[in-house]
Length: 111
Length: 187
Image 1: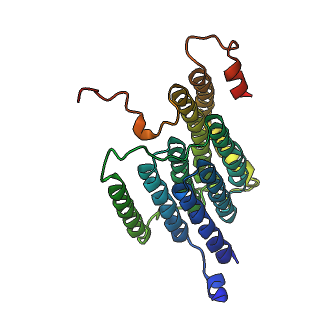
Image 2: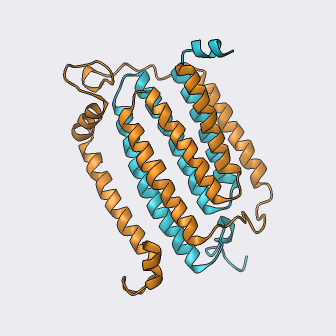
């Protein structure tokens, strides 16, 4: 078993399939979980899956620009997390223990 | 050897991702996220992206997850996932949609794709023009020549994010510095 696995050549396809699995887990988690913090972590999972494909194709095409794009994705993810967590803190200050379902103040109360 | 490393860390990455989604305690989710992020860093090593390995570990595992843990600690661990079920069929439909996306991506992955031409000598990861230097120098050259304008925009974005976070996290209508509670949280 082990020599067979060791002899495999890891091509771009393996990384793409792995990234697809990571992305799907993140997407399903984002849709099913109600805790806003965990939803945020699922977004990070999806961003990482995209990063893996970027770097894998960068290697396949021998192109450094794929890696430069991952750098930008990381910077935007960091900014997004900082602002998102500040929003979550601001929401939690008003109401304790809110899940995504409880944040319905924009809903028309008469309907 | 590369294949063994790949499969071990692929299993770890998927286990971490499932841990993020399936554990009820947000602290456990954050720690599972670290497992996935470090595994992704290992893939970056295998894919010859030395700079991104360092950035991934420092920014993601070091900064972002710690920020998550700070906020969890600040707000208290909340294991209640939902008070009710406002949309009855949301979970099954979400899982079904996830499976459809997965099948679609798998079908795409089985095809020949990314058949574009290899990069020119100036943008190669390996070899290419003489005197390009190591991975860090190559990324830096591309970043500070071709992508200088997006790089500056990223700097502006980060400044805006900092200002926005400070504005959102402090209570409105009060001057900063008169809130002992907030100062306690910011420390």
